[in-house]
View 1 (cartoon, helix red, strand yellow):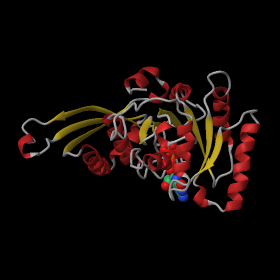
View 2: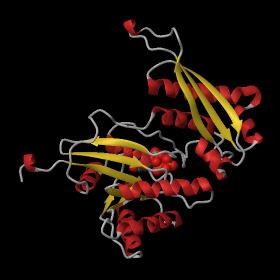
View 3: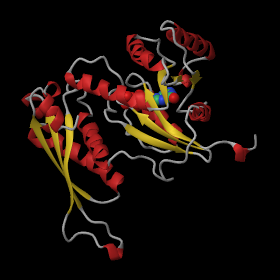
Length: 317
Ligand SMILES: Nc1nc2c(ncn2[C@@H]2O[C@H](COP(=O)(O)OP(=O)(O)OP(=O)(O)O)[C@@H](O)[C@H]2O)c(=O)[nH]1
C-alpha cells in the first residue's frame, strides 16, 4: 500500500494508572509539548487533561485521567465514576505500569476496573504501557513484561499490546503512538492543528494555584484542598491593543480547606506563606496567559467538603 492509500484515523486515547506512574510525562512526550502541569509528587492531576498528537495520517486526542483510586470518600467515588465514563467512550486505553515497581494492589485494582470494559461487542482495547523503562536493566524489564502479561491472564483477558517506553529518553514513544493510532477509527481531524490542549484556562489556573499552595505542606494537606477560580476580568484602562500591550487581568481565586488549622498552614505567619504562594502561582499564570495579572487569593474553610454533595457541586465536581 502506498502512503496515499493509508486511511486517515482520528480518535481518543486515555492514559490510566496509579498516581506518579508517569502519565503526565508520557502525555507530554507523545504530544511533544508541555500540556499537563507537572509535579514530582503524586495526585496532582485531578482534572482531565487532553493533549493532541497531530500526524499527517492521524489525529490522536489524549485524555489524561485523574487516575483510578480506591474510593474512600464521595469525591473519590465521583472521580472514579467520571473516569469510568471517560473510559467507555474512548477508542483505546493505555494502562501505565512503571517498570521500576512491582505490580501492586493499586495496579490490580485498576486492572479489575478495566476488565469489564475489555469484553463484549463494544470492548475497548487496552494497551499495557510499561513506563520509566530507562530505570531498570533489560533482565528486570523482561521479567516485568511477563508479570504485566500475567496480570491480564489472571483476569482471563489479553492486553492489545504491551509496550515498554521511556518518556524521558524518548524510547519507544513513536512506537506507542503507532500502536494507539492503529486502534483509532478512520476519520478526519477533529481539532485544527496547533490546538494542543482544550483544557479550559480556569482549570489550569486552579492547578497552578493548587500546586503552589501544596508545595512543602503536601503531607499535611493531602486531599483537603480545593481551588476554584471565581473570575478573570480585564482591569479597565489597562492595555493598548494599538501598541500591542496586553491588559492587566484581575484573577480572583478561592482556596477551600476543611479545617481552621489547615487555613493557618496555607496562610502562614502574618500571611507570609500565602504571599509566597501568590507570587509563585502568579508567575506561572502570567506565563500561561501571556499577560500581566493581579492575583487575589482567598482562603475559606468548607467543612468536610469532600463528603458533602452540595459543596462538591459548587466546586465543580
Ligand atoms: N526516569 C524516568 N522518570 C520518569 C519517566 N516518566 C516520568 N518520570 C518521573 O516520574 C514522576 C511522576 O511522573 P508524572 O508524569 O507526574 O506521573 P503521573 O502519573 O502523571 O502522576 P499523577 O499526576 O500523580 O497522576 C516524575 O518525577 C517524573 O519525572 C521516565 O520515562 N523515566
